[in-house]
Image (cartoon, rainbow, N blue to C red):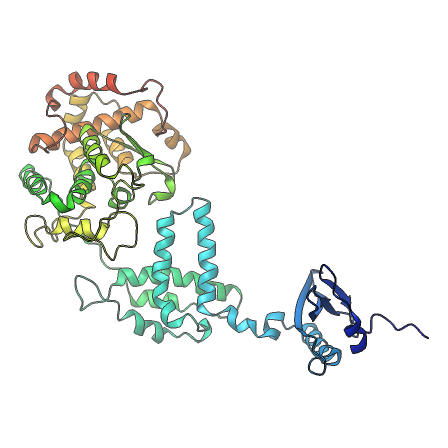
Length: 468
């Protein structure tokens, strides 16, 4: 009996294939790319194995062999049709119908976020920034996630964006939030541009429709009388149920740090003995280098008080429960809410008392303006050798990416100058109105006398290493 060509299997041959411990393929043939996979369970599935123009091998699964339903005859017809379409330039995704799913908004957003998460792993952006991107993208995904971007029109997105109103004025759109959504959407749509699925990115037109809101510059409360009034009101604040928000605001005033960094502060990054707080570069607004925050005695005292409350928690200012006026039931993050802190500041001394007068970010301006006004006095009192403006810029993290400057900042000398400056600033505020914590022994008129004693108390200052 003549031997049948094993590369041209019949239904009888396929039924005779026995399962083994491991799955194995067999060539069906006609066309030569058609094969069948035999699984240990006995299931048999047709597939084609072909090479693209670059010589790379691909596999494409057809259907399971079922006697009288889907046989080698059906598989050969389908395989021949697919191979013919591949030769004529169609992609396997187009043939399978997956091409349309490739450009659904939800799939492009998923691809964009995967790229952004790689930046998190490489410490190019913070996890907080990544979570913000997800939050903003969830807005259009609810309506358009299952829609091909080719069929998403400007008017569709505009109709959605027009419902996003400003919290402080519900009669106008929140252009800042809309633009942040657009920035992320634009990246997802750009994938379609890159693949030539679409020829124009409509998000650019939407950005023009929602112009950047003009920055609001609030007057800095720089007069001593205004600062005195503010400190008195902050001290009188109801601390029974929301004491840690009072401490957050005091820490923002005393360090000039961004409120987001204060809310996200972790105990592992703080050394109270060395008066140092190190914020990793991935958590900074500008991912240039780790930011070293010098803690004056007043800031350190605030943190010591907070330590007794949250020493067993990851965050210095953890999320509060639901048993106070300023509870945070909608706060999904494990740390205290920045929005609640802003609300408390705004209502300090009465509802909306500080609205349009002071924001938490404004404490940075108070520090910067004070350093400018009293520069000569600061140099005289503290014997600082470097530029007060440069020291202030470094404290506020107004950084450049020059590696020499980064290295210089990490020296012991510049840290001491920064700590001197911040101690002078803390003394300045405490002399305007007693802060209610820390030592009143410090006076800027005899700053150096007290400083010598203080510096001697710092542990390992001579072999200072910028680690906590």
